[in-house]
Image (cartoon, rainbow, N blue to C red; front, side, top):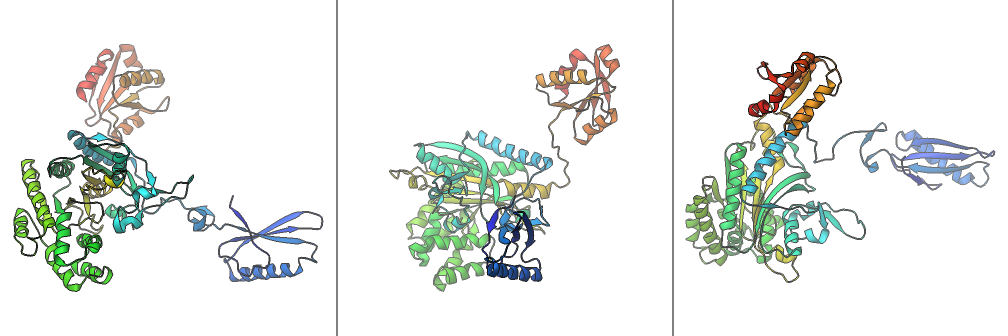
Length: 530
């Protein structure tokens, strides 16, 4: 039932959409209710307002007492859109359901990513879907406004997790871990402007891989690049590029161009938009919104448009403006190591040094990277954007440690929804099975329910995926049709004659060929065929 609100007598303004209920008590003590909805008709609204005023003036002398109550309207305030009193069934903005076929594709993508994580020796952890608000505050720069805050529950201010990286850093500090290679696959939440066809949601999965510990320079970073290369190669979604840059190079560049130190992060946030915004608009934001000198912005523009490979590293090392910057030279030295190690790991082919890559999150301190696929970057659905990204964040754990102990970390994250969006576009004509059933047990005659259940128990006991009809006497053709429609490769057919002879018929769904198999040889025969 809707919530009831008392509406004071004599009130002149009735909120639009509120249900007005007149409760009338007669001289005989009987109670009557009359209702109307304010705002549905101007005449009704004026009449309601007049009635309130009139009753207020006469309430002392009238034999009948009138009280006005307001019910919460059926509009958005009631927790969801309604029309004519009926709830409109829909998922919240920025979310979606997945049908069985879509889930089959997602399971394939998840398994591919998880297998690569295991191949690199990663262990799995899990953290809560929400954290203390202070854990997440101040870690995401301008993106902090996208965090979902929760209502106070028992005296704690909580927020839904924005990513899996900050909870991981909290986990390391809280458990006093000095080294770990972990992966974590879970949902995260962002109050973003969704674009469903481009894989941008408010609730979505991230698949994270991180290495924490004090190791020699760029070896863990190179492994992360290799892992991205392996996952995207195995998913076979087309050509891809892994863009890399270094936060120290960017900070040194900003300093050399005349950006005040306190504006490094906001300037970095502006540069981060270059992948989807023209330079002219980024420059305008730097000057008008960030307060940079136009000449400084122009100098930055000369560099952030550069991209290449090892030759770009050499060019920047010799640049007159940058050669005296310790940050730039330290970052370029790291990039040399990165390219050397990636060559040895056979993953340098798709690597590209992009000076315009910034990644706007505040916690990055070293190498940063993003992966994009050529498939899905054009067409009427729009660009999907990056499908993986990450970088080094050496100081994040220290923010949570009471003694400010530094635990160097580097990691990456795959956006499963974006990968799935591209997979959908690329494989629209590919037939996908929603079920993993290997054998269907069909009855050729009536009265076979007991024999079918015995066969199911035997198949399941030997780890063979099998199912049968839930009808005691199903039609034979309907059973065969079910197997064909669901792509079940084998059908066991049993009837009275098969029971008497101690055999079954094994039918191959694709060719519709049948052969007779002795009952005691059935399991062995099926296992050799699967």
